[in-house]
Image (tube, rainbow, N blue to C red):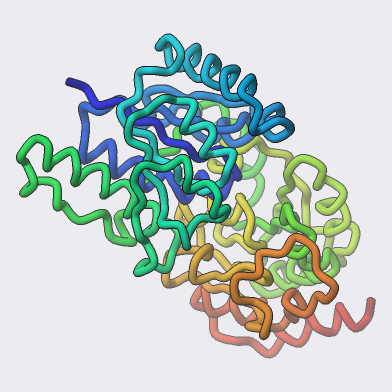
Length: 378
């Protein structure tokens, strides 16, 4: 009998990327399983067409956030899940896995009517109250990176399935190593062609700069991004393509206007087009946000700018990639979207250029001071 699995990871882009290796591991280990993924609309675009997802359930959680504990909300959500899954009232799931650890993701999972509802141990949940929706909890405290934590949840499902089938010897299959993480993202030929014509045919070498951050506390100044663009052109002849998400176009334009060499060029791209772009880029520089994690998944060399979040948990997983930040007294478990002081993102341009030179295997050069001089001049 086919096992029907519901993945609950609603948002955000980076979180969805970090969940993909666990879902790929599930599909590879349980090839006959039918896997559905409940996700919010904006993040769903990245998952469309993925070979490890049998059914993508695009959930509208706006009403859920407003009236989360009303019985009518739960019934409406249950009907929505049922309609999307092709099963009356969502009764078709055998197991649901909450990779989010929030009350809203717990409600979605509960509405699916799965008899088994698996999630993180209580002390590892982002919202502790969400434990009431779980029937099984898995401790992942021995793992540091969120990808490994997610793989631990997937492994719990795989191992229990093997035990039921008396096939434990095949299940205790180890989860993939860092070098074998799978990020099954499908990009259409049209999106590949758009990037090929817009970028690859024009620029021999280019870097991606992403000044956006979702949270104000993750933002690095546009003047410093512009200085990085100038340095990349001056020292490596890299054009810098400045990417942006919804509402961030002015940030990209500000980087361009502050660039002295006019080699910081804003480029519009959908999520799938960004994947195609990242696969061709020589470098990515940006904060802890969705584009960084997509770039890491694509194997793009990354220099990450980290302030209120910990790179050990949320950073790029390739040990060759570099994160730059300041380990302040308040950084542990910070995750603040607003803060009265901003020292954690007071990262110098010189620190970043040195990290770029190291990541790309370039020897430090005398012109590193150029970027600091540009900032001083402004």
